[in-house]
Length: 432
Image 1: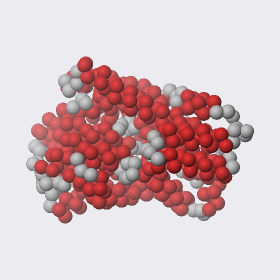
Image 2 (image 1 turned 90 degrees about the vertical axis):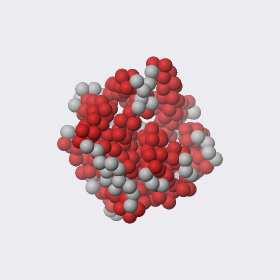
Image 3 (image 1 turned 180 degrees about the vertical axis):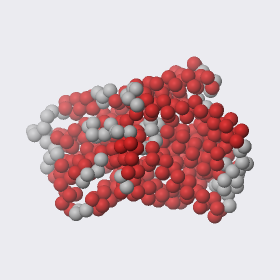
Image 4 (image 1 turned 120 degrees about the vertical axis):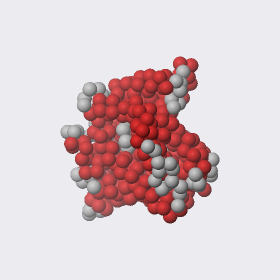
């Protein structure tokens, strides 16, 4: 592709984004325009439609609608309350205890549902009012909720890790990515808790009532079957009992049975649950369609090779190249949603980092955490707007208390980038 065509591709894409054209349409239109500029050298326009359809012709992608459905069932199934009560029994008696409860509950619910948005809305809608009653500012509660909900995108099962596995062209397996996400997700949660400890001591936040061992055991029993889903789904994948796609179906059945047993949903609730899940799945799948078309265009014109050559020529050290890639992805994450960003930029940057010896699984975790930061930042941060709306505070009010949390996320990102064992120790331990 000539330089002018590359400029047109990205200029048209970013212009459409600034005009608030939906991301999927922006990707598709920009790809079509670039193809038209080189129609004499490239296949016909029907290629875009073909690449869109073949891009989602993947057995692994079937896991996404089922995990979305499982998350929707759990969101409406009373599971969030059980997880919150269990987390509260563990840490509520510490200074700033309810803030720790928020983080732990978001980690647990985000991991079970596989959705940061679901964790933000489910946990935030309960915890914000509880925290305000004990003297926590609503904007601080929103900041805790927003950033901690991203841990569920690293701790499996995670839909975005499945998307990355597809974008990597098979270089990284879903099972390896799932296992690799555990330690980084837990490290992020602990880092956020560490900052909360400092704030709680400085502001003298209230302590909750200490739970007895009997109360801890009671809340654990109530949350046990919700937590068991993680063991069944991830354990089954790692043990080779079933694939990620089969695990997603098991997750749906398990979540439905659990919700019916808890009597938090009824049979009559399922049509609405299915409709909400279908809407979410349709958006995700259309994004994948158009993103795969753009990824094909990159590959056809050897853009990944050009980018790899450029970075390797301009920078002499791996440290500098990894830093440049991280900064680029942090900027991209501020204005692009996670799914298209993963699909578009994985083919560009993965060859670069692999040439420098970085494992594709390791890069997947780095990429996802990069884009998690973007979900919490304006102007397009989905979780930022959801969390602010749930807490009933404006985005401008949340930004100031949110900044230290974002800084912590970036510090954790740097640690994960330059210490590969944080991501790779568990996959290697399990032979993945």
